[in-house]
Image (cartoon, rainbow, N blue to C red):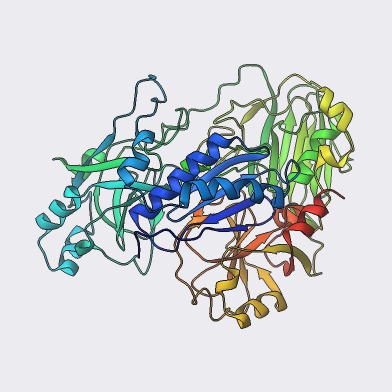
Length: 572
């Protein structure tokens, strides 16, 4: 029964996250227990814990595996889980209520206990309203009345920064997800899928039925917290007059401003190639707001390049995907390349990987196409000096913030560089594994790359033959891959996740999801913070750099290992 306590299940998701599953249903009382557990974990201040991400029926705790081991962290979490989930389900209003009044991000005033969301229903603002009404066997006015009459609560934020999954919708107006998702859903669209409702914070693809639209801004990367709605927040929809025309030009995020360098520019982009972005070590602490870590897709190479020029590990660099780029130096810079095996010349002189060179004003650095790997890092002493957003200079392309004006570089862009500075940490760590991260297997062209992974997630829920087929097969990287995730081509897996119900839960970089077509998707640094597909586990941290270097056509095999083996590989 929903009102009775259930035993919690603590399992690893990769070697840098602990999943605490309290149940397998979408239920307000169960979700309230998740939020109570989330607060208790935050208040405990456990060593090594980076952040926690609540979902419908589970909590994902991210941690630094070099600071604390899985066994020690799981042991520390057990009494916290027992103290917050051992009794009967609590009234969600009592459990979640204290969290609702939190300081505003800008004014310091308290947040209202209930956020009211004004919605223009129907017509161009809600193109699917008529079809939803037809399916429900009621008038559009009745659908609007029922949708706006419900009391909603934010179960979790995920899918995209600021996107709220809201519980409490009248099941009489429920509709399954669209068979074919839209390529672009306007910002502020209010959608329904099954018994859930949600709001798209900015324009993006989506498969929910759209019944209205709001002008309320749900996500602002300059605010603290950046998401207007938070897990546990109470929400009411209010029908208002208006038209889609009035909403057509509204963006969910402030219009990105072209970057105005605070100092003279040092690098000019002549040819950005396929995709070049500013990236650093990533942003942490905002996954509960739907913001992924982002950062360098190959953290090992990125760190080695920075060490070569005397930077700290968080200095921003350029991540060059598939080569073919060229840059002109406008000031004297010390630079180093790392990552994919690519021919590069500085005024026709060859540039070796991870060897610092001095570029003088007027010199041009040119990159060929990678012979092995996919991503090359151009690191410069002092780092690329763009403004940090949410504690990081990394570019997050799906939402258009961070890096250089929130976008990939274009020809003519001019980049400032910070003053060279060698910290005590980088002096001591130059060339060490602690400074540069663990060595990783590399993509080497036609050979099959072995990717170690920690079994977890819904591994036991998959049929034995599906698990065996997964580790036995060779998988080819699809061209439909990007920094969000790698899609793989190969024989579809049967019997995926059918033995137990599944509800969306937290994800990690390297998580191995199995989509509806039975083929794996491995999440990368721009991934969603929560996901809606069952998982087989997650790629070990020691292999994340190899993951970031995989190119379309590369073949891999997944090799299972325990979390203890994965963490031991980080320390050797």
